Image (cartoon, rainbow, N blue to C red; front, side, top):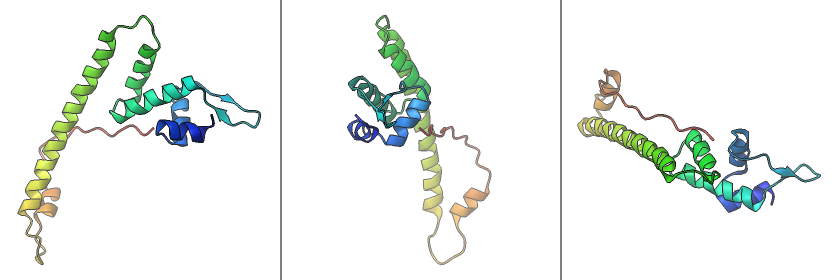
Length: 142
């Protein structure tokens, strides 16, 4: 199967698939005589796994660990659960930070008159020191 077909089957773009190959999450696929990548059923299964893991927010490092465990017949579910627990804790921290950001923005928004006056509590708030520390990390780009 060519990369365009694999992309459709797995809800990924061709670029994402190439990036996952470069990141070492997917083995280098076989190529046709013309140089086109060819994906096997096993490759598609692994791409679906990666796609689903990204959809629920696992990092590339976590996905790498999960893939390794998925392929290890001697793995324990304890190991998988530990990675998931770590991810859940990270998500809870992000949610808490996002809720703090939302509360601050809503306060500024509610106190802004939204009229013809140049006074704006949103701009004033942005110009002041913010004492809260928001810890929402940027998502990995792959």
